[in-house]
Image (cartoon, rainbow, N blue to C red; front, side, top):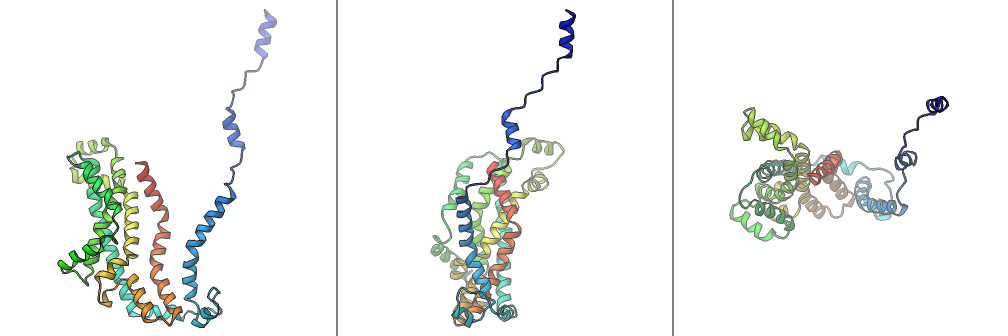
Length: 300
């Protein structure tokens, strides 16, 4: 009995077993994807980036260089094309028009879209599903399809050759995307927060401004960026609505400039580079916010 007791006292305790899957996962290095996947990704990146680089670098060349070597690098680098465009009042006037249209359209889309999304996400009423389906169906009808009847409506309101004739339709056609993105954000807000705000004496408008907007800020930032970039790059609607060059936006100004200076290819490339540069910078700076906002919308 004593020997058995002593043996039982001196025997080591069994070690806790670690799952083989976890231990193996810790010791196994992360594997790279298939090389073909990276090849396809680099191919798509090259297809997207190559035209932009060609336009930007082409602005630093002369017409003789472009004629002798269309795909060559600038030798020497010429900055006169860009400086002449930046000194042009026409460019800055079109830049200001695009900025006004972009900011006004973005504010209208975000404000109206947020209010509509709040009603659809937080209230129960008849035809709620039909209203949401109506906005979802709006994604299937781009502005190009409705450009002819849209122009007739704009003409009846007397908004031809007016920036409001671009801003108002862009707000209308930007609402479907905004509502589809923001509704999941607003639905994900717990009802307990709204009940606690009501107990503290907050009205529905107070709850909207104090709680809803801060909690849905990632989605608001996402739809704001998408609305601004879409407005900045819009070409078809200004082409139909605007007649005076003083009211042109930059996309339409690029077309007019290229027609007027068709023989000066290098300067046309410089004008095009400067016209698309603000949208590229804006998108590059806020790229992570766009991805984060869309991810939150899918989770919601």
